[in-house]
Image (cartoon, rainbow, N blue to C red; front, side, top):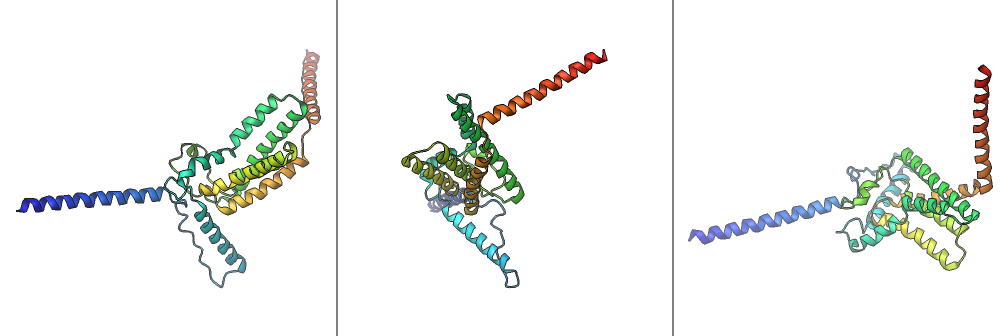
Length: 266
């Protein structure tokens, strides 16, 4: 009589153990897909009436920024509400990465068929390098922590950033969009495609929970202004040739003076 009871108890124990393990796995998946970086949940946004109005407004805006960024991160991982379209969103994200843009610009610069084409690609390459420098400088000064990256992404482990503000993809998208619209695109349909691409790249950073809303918004404004700087210091092909010739003449004159001084000493 005790044998069936012991079997039922053992079955209940196995069922309870399997249920507990499944709940544990679910918690692990949820923790691996958590939006905020470790320690970010503990942000203190409490305010008091004794604080200055500027501090109260800043904390209120930061709280809205965190809440809205969390709501938009619907592709943060495979278990997210829109996790099924995550590969497509990551493809859009990669289209705004600096590596394919630099490779394409340098290749077109080297293989350009006309001087005008090479001049445009030269300035695009310089603009991309300027974007990297300015974004790195601002990130180092602000030092805002990034949301948690998805650990299942192999590529994101190699290109992970330490700081979040501003979004480099957003600055690059805005700058390249203005560059293409001003220098290469001349039809209405292509203009719509370029603007749509820049918007999708910026949106992908929010859907994948890579950045906060303020990171992307400031990045778009920063990239828009960067092209104005590139346009002001535009490097023409003739100016580049004159600069290279000037440097070559300086080197030749330096070598000649050294040889002449060596002969005079002997």
